[in-house]
Length: 192
Image 1 (cartoon, rainbow, N blue to C red):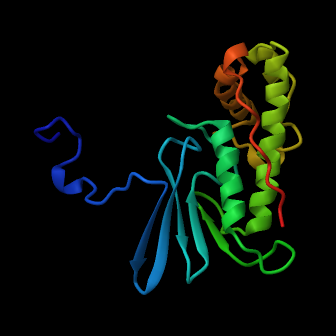
Image 2 (image 1 turned 90 degrees about the vertical axis):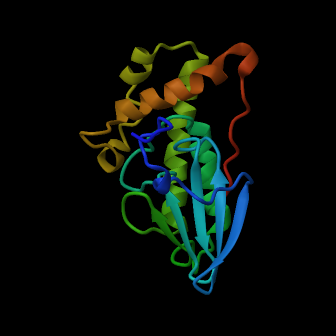
């Protein structure tokens, strides 16, 4: 532990940060855009667009082989907003296939079509949980409804099950479900 109480020595601290929605850089002969995506997987998600290469690194905002994990500062509506942002940035080559390469934090390299399918799944599960929350269902009742059953074969694992995802969604929506704190539903952006 360093003198100031940090578990990391000062030489390991970042030397360059940004406090705006987007920071533009030019590195290795290429324009690079750092785009802050608030309250998605965490409260510090960054999408990194390599413009010349047409590659978008998205971290854990999009994980094609598993349900989204919500960590400190993250929310289900933030994940959906992040997925919509990815879809706004990505440019398909043909019929939503090819084009911009999307590099997730975990899993295979993907394209716009993959992100669109994933966004649709996340939105459907969020809407199902939200409907039950609005009807005052308990977490146990929501889990018992098996709201992810048709997706579990693709996105569930022994480490992160459909029930775990439903619980994360439920907890994320609870503040929004209170009568005076009801946030508007996140808009779904149609795929091109």
